[in-house]
Image (cartoon, rainbow, N blue to C red; front, side, top):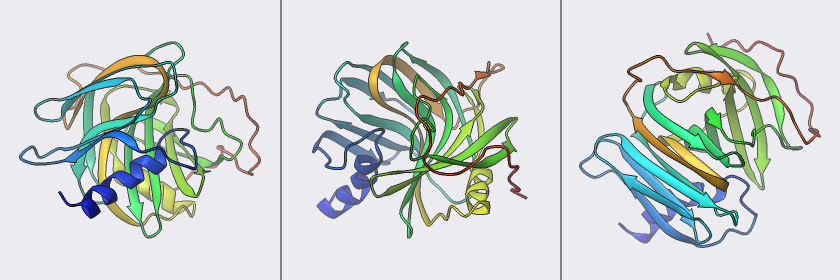
Length: 245
């Protein structure tokens, strides 16, 4: 793989990592490949990350982390896909009590450059708990309610669709989230690959996730915490209903 190709695959993950500083550190390990497996596997970890991952057959991967020093990582598996996809996934996600970690469908678009998250579950940090965040409303998809948020991490525009009940496993109808973003004026550009992934910065935990396989049993859901420690400096409300028809 040429240097230009590696750079184009790595840069979005380096810039978009949870809580990443403006001046990025050189990552210690980077993997981005498809090969014979139809699933696209991504692994990014900076030199402070204390994380182990295994790329298994099919859509399965495992992640174990223990990060007392705030190392960053993004690890996931998915597809190079089009606009509207029924993205199934299943598995386990067990963050520790103080783990700042996400389970989300993650992707990147170009022209304009944005990164998006369909947030399915997380540890102690809600992405809206940021003075730079704003809520545009909510919509229904795949048996749940999602709130649409955005914020800026440096000069990177981040779009968030946050499920109001946390779950691990199910179907994500990706087009519903993209239509919701567009409906409130959050413009997306040309799509690259998308992965169901784990992103983390602090704390410990483990996960085993399989992309492309729906859960075999009923998924238990729990309410997403709404407590915020920061007051948003931007205007917005989650009470509006977003039309995604």
